[in-house]
Image (cartoon, rainbow over all chains, first blue to last red):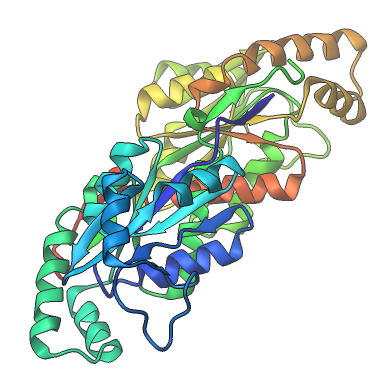
Length: 201
Length: 201
């Protein structure tokens, strides 16, 4: 009677420290129709990381070659290192009927939306800037100056939250995960994403 | 940082036998921020019913007087009896911060949307017309002719499902209840329904 037109990309964006990676991974782990997108990066692998789990680690030249070939749905250079989402990550997931979850920043979201207008864009906000500051200080072993920069960037990014389809306040983690999952599940019932099927009409 | 502009009416519509009343009541029972709207009717109370639980039973003259006073958000005359949603049901719920769930038909939905443009409109469809027919035959002790009429009406109503914001296929009841609840919870995070607050900016 009705069926989905197709699966879609889901961007989980938000300022550093808002918890977007945790939320995106938790949502993907709980919903079998979700696939968490693994980004490429040219930065060196860290001890705690695994290639293909946290990122796919790619040489700088190779990354630049892939940029030229148009193989990234979005990419950015941050502190001298490249990060990017391969189009194949999105398109292979969607071809299998999986909604693909991207944990990316505000600029990345714009690029993905430009290439995939059906993208569902969710913005994660901290309960307040003072909570964000507290989280950044607790989690990171960064110099004061870097924390200051992150907070300034966060302030600027938060100004743009109303450009997203949905805004989730990450106060209690469990509530925020459920909110993200509800948004995704609801989206699968949105009339605009459904089409008529011959079925039993 | 962000908060809801205000609560909103939620219309659960769909053809007779699709399960909209069961779904609307189950959703309202599970989410403390939901209030199920009780309609007025001029038809006689049945043995299994309670005044104020199933409907508020109102005399025909009194109902017509209330129509003239503009006290209904939507109303209809069906088989000679009046049915309607008092504006007070919607507005008192919203004033308390509750989203108000209305279990009404396609015509009623149009009236509510006209009066309350912020209405969230969800359409419930049966998995197929043959399942609908089976349900109508199992549930009702109605003459064949009445069942035929209901099926014809259902066919016409189903044609209009894409006028709604969301479409939920009521195949397994539990899945459909969760879909309706996800849609409502997601809606509370929709950027267009949120506003900036002074908070911690």
